[in-house]
Image 1 (cartoon, rainbow, N blue to C red):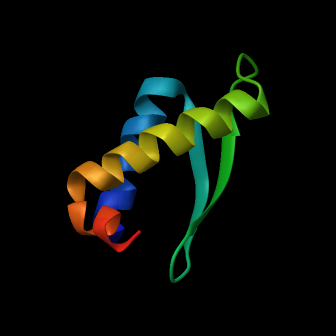
Image 2 (cartoon, rainbow, N blue to C red):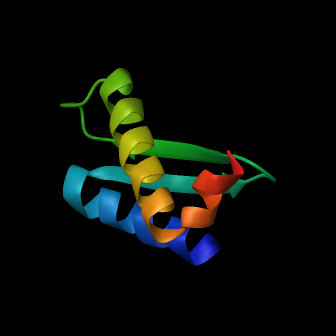
Length: 68
């Protein structure tokens, strides 16, 4: 799962100019410290990261969706 999180974050960084300064994993959730360009509002950044991240985690790890 850790390698998937790194991969997803890297893809988001390349596509959206959103940089993950720090990523923290807890038992059932993830914390991000993010830096971005001024053209995105904080709301847009959160919406983008959450939607892409959840979609990719479910695609790469279908067992996560079954646990919900």
